[in-house]
Image 1 (cartoon, rainbow, N blue to C red):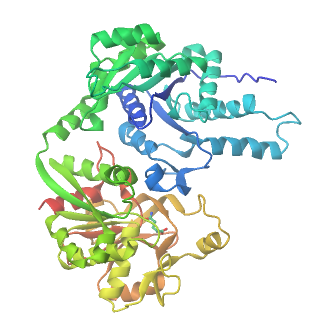
Image 2 (image 1 turned 180 degrees about the horizontal axis):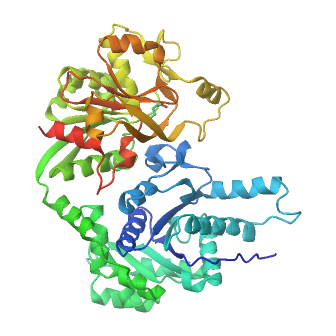
Image 3 (image 1 turned 90 degrees about the horizontal axis):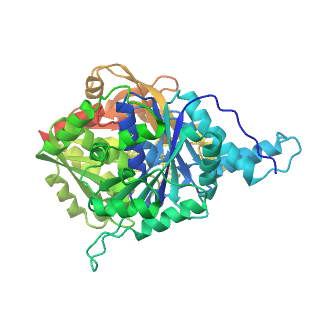
Amino acid sequence: MVVVFMANSSKTKYIFVVGGVMSGIGKGVTVASTARILKDYGFRVSAVKIDPYLNVDAGTMNPTEHGEVFVTEDGLECDQDIGNYERFIGDNILRDNYMTSGTVYKAVIDRERNLNYGGKCVQVIPHITDEVERRLLNVGRKNKADFVLVEIGGTVGEYENLLFLETGRIMKLKMPDQIMFMLVSYFPIPEMVGEMKTKPTQHAVRAMNSAGIQPDIIIARSSQPLDDIRKQKVSIFCNVSAQNVISAPDISSIYEIPVNFEKDHLGSRIMEKFNLKPKEKNSRSWNNFVKKVKSSSKTVRIGIVGKYFGTGDFTLADSYISVIEAIKHAAWSLNLKPEIVWLNSESYEKNPKQLEELKDLNGIIVPGGFGKRGVEGKIMAINYVRKNNIPFLGLCYGLQLAVVEFARNVCGMADAHTTEVDPKTTKPVITTMPDQLVNIKEKRMGGSMRLGAYKCKLNLNFQSSKLYGVNLISERHRHRYEVNNAFRPVLEKKGLVVAGINPERNLVEIIEWSHNKFFVATQFHPELKSRPLDPHPLFRGFIKAAAK
Ligand code: GLN
């Protein structure tokens, strides 16, 4: 076996973040929060997510199983954690910052097929680990980053993520003063015992050790902060100094996590590890934002009409995380406390009387979606809010179904539909462009939608352009279907406003119905670009109208 040592001249520091004990304890927000702290110290920060599964990207996965599919500016369908990184850091994260085992293996196998390994035997080690390392070094270089945080999906001890831990181990061997490891672990407080238990974390550290890695810092997730006795115990048993055990108790808003981490001096601990000093301390805007989150008291109730009702509220919150966060950002910026209500579109199909519940809400969102299930219920909900002048924001499928509703009920085209649901409709008001038809026919479904940032030219006379305050914008997309231009004259004649157009291909990007307080729908996903310190203008406009 030949181990190739790669030259590394840059001094980017890499912080590998791994999970212990169990998943779902907030590794992603830990990475995002740590990145925020380092950014506020004046460093250039980037963050990478590694998912150990074999899918080449997240686009082919069901949101009920894996949560929302996030989309980067450059059109990669990836894990929702990238969304958290963007929201906390405030910068765009691009496709290079996401990889799966599938991506990595595919790159190596493609290279082998092209004879690029010069006749060598291609092996998991070093060729796969080299490829992971190459990608990580590339992120540091491209972003001119002082720090790259690397989140390894899954939990230590799992077979799937071993190769990525191995890459971390090898990188530490090659550049010891540039690498550190952080373990995010869970400390249960079993009811029958009534005290916090450290044993599961001790085992997690053992599992890391057997991969040749020692954590430098342990982030202790629990319902409560760790007391000094526990910190000492973790220190002795896990071979970490007590001050490097950072409490991460449950809190009501994830945005408070950086503030909480700093109470235990996480930033200073990282500085000490790398022998660095903060270039500045600039956490004022974040801290002020967190104060605002806590002080907002007047409630605004927003309903989300969806279908991903697989396993209750958790699934929903995960499937629509960017929408939820965008609502929150906008509400807080207006000193309002957001309350989100889940509305099951299928229940309207079974019992139309239930639509009356929409009256109790301040505003309704019909978010993105795919396929047939629950579609008629969504159309019924759009019809109801349009007729009853309830503020409405439609996102992607939300726009498409609003067009269907309008075509059916205002333009008298009873058969109007999207060809996604009814390929034989005589009034295909929503349909595919010819290039997408080829993808569907040839079953080229992965990574082949209209993805990532596209320009949109705004029609100056309408609400959306007033909210944006400019006439050319760029927003992110993820869809295969579009408004059918053949039907635009009829729709517009009946009063549907086309308020934004993609200039290159003349595609409808925003529609409005000017008779209502707020009735705006977008073909793109504005929620993907909302940031806590920079709420999205359309969401702000929507929430403002809802609160009136
Ligand atoms: N299913 C629709 C399409 O593919 C909408 C997708 C979405 O809402 N993201 O065009």
